Amino acid sequence: MTDSPATPDTPPPVGPNAPSVNALSERLVARLVDDAPRFGAAVSHTAHGTVLVDAGAQAPGSVAAGVLIARICMGGLGHVTVRESLDAQPLWPSMIEVRTSWPVLACLGSQYAGWSLSATREQTGGKKFFSLGSGPARALAVKEPLYAELGYRDRHARGALVLEVERLPPQVVIDKVLHDCGLTPAQLTLIVTPTHSVAGTVQVVARVVEVALHKTHVLGVPLDEVVEAGGSAPLPPPAPDGLQAMGRTNDAILYGGRVHLTVKHDAVAKRLAAELPASTSRDYGRPFADIFTAFNHDFYQIDPALFAPAEVWVSSLESGATWHGGRVDAAVLHGQWSAAS
Image 1 (tube, helix red, strand yellow):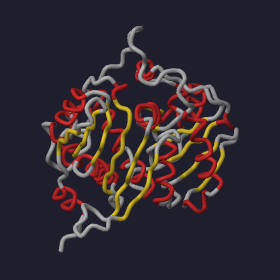
Image 2 (image 1 turned 45 degrees about the vertical axis):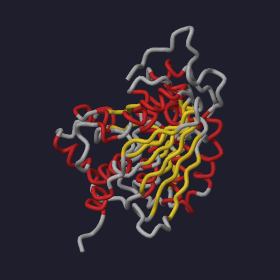
Image 3 (image 1 turned 30 degrees about the vertical axis):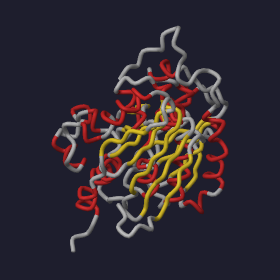
Image 4 (image 1 turned 90 degrees about the vertical axis):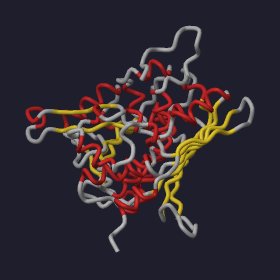
């Protein structure tokens, strides 16, 4: 993946005049906090006023909470819904559908889980802590080189970050987020959604379009080529085991995710249709939990080409033509998710 800034004669794909993802998502965060009991979430505050939302660690959470949190993750620039399939032979009964007219900013500038946050046992006074942070507060901290390439930094006075972890963050991690985002404690909301929870499963599967944008970036395609994006993926029931839950959410995208991108030029559309699908990876074909275990639980040993939707359609504004690539593999999904008869 290229993390170098855009050259002076190439406009950045987002740029400084783009909307504030933290401002646009602020009302969504307020809705989650104000209506927490209805969403199955629990709200607490640190001694200094940081808002902590438990949407699946101890609180039960819900599908509705996961949808709202996915919209927060996209910086208020994405539509996320759950649709029940009425097809005679559906891929899966429940599908997550995502659409955005700001694909680069919503998906890479906000939703992408790219901020690594950790603390040692000594720092926490107990268990070590690790989580990836996703959501709009990433654009306040701009700790990732990606933001230099995007040409984007948010400067809103409030921020929200989503943590895919099984417990509330320790104070040392909260302090780091506050420092890096330039916020006071009362200006920050942290939302916890473990992958094995209902809300966590929803918000991870809702990354189906983001995964396509990320692989587009990995392939070196100019991000400003992508002007519209939408997609869907099956919503599996969460698994009680953390490894299996992670496997299910990844399989939903790798073997059941469908994405439609609109790009500016024919050559880009044709290339993405050929190179974007997950089936281009050497590791494609087995359940993700099996792949992850085979590589000793090390993400960095897995072929990066695997992290992509199963099937893509790419339309070009240049000619109006659409190219298609990849396919869904219902057998892999049902083999993992369906009970034996």
